Image (cartoon, rainbow, N blue to C red; front, side, top):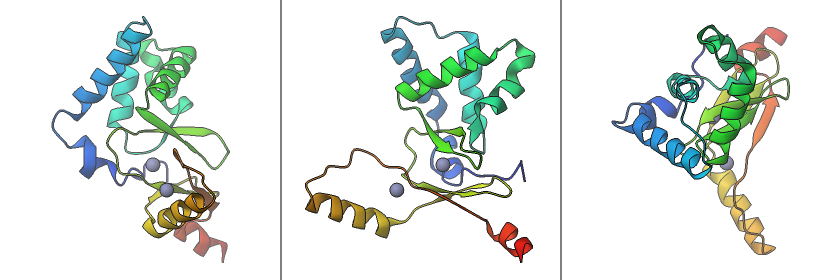
Length: 163
Ligand SMILES: [Zn+2]
Ligand SMILES: [Zn+2]
């Protein structure tokens, strides 16, 4: 189950587009510069790993893949925090309640279904739900800045195994 592709809106919408990685890199570089931080080779490798991923990655996934290159846990933790600060990545809660990350820039809005058995995270768009929440919030004078729907349950395969 580990290697199933999860980022269904990613390859066609963004990763394949010319210059995408470069633009993501520029946003990160600018953010670091504003904070008087350096775009180190380690931070660059972490960003590359996220850009090449086809699933939602945990901090441990990234650390596990890059520790051979002398990248420590704290470095991964800090890089993720910085990438979140400049809205290049967003977090999704996994089946154990831990955060996973996906590159966010220019991707269409989507929400997530999380399988509690195999851990698979399914990306979904439901325009009707989005419309209802806008309408209801407006009615009570609430302006939504952002939202995150995370639904936990059992994917098709795991449901059928449960019988
Ligand atoms: Zn949504
Ligand atoms: Zn996602």
